[in-house]
Length: 69
Image (cartoon, rainbow, N blue to C red; front, side, top):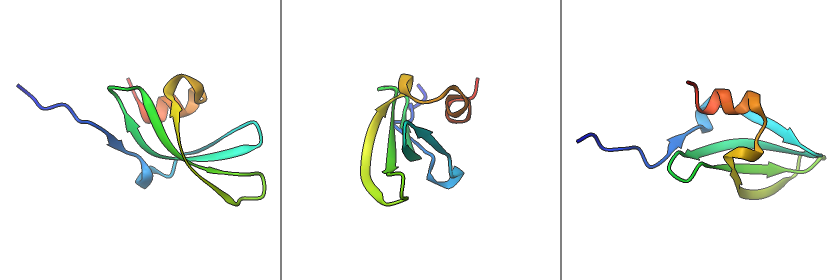
């Protein structure tokens, strides 16, 4: 049986997106939990910290880059 990946590293792809007035940089994707680890930045570009976002809450264009079908 093939071993499933626990996470997909996205930091090398440099995927960034914005929600409201915050910008996020994708770090890691967890396919089993359908979540995304992101680094959050405020409107001034200052680092807020690492957050875990649900895959359903990210923009459609980013979903296509993270999980291509």
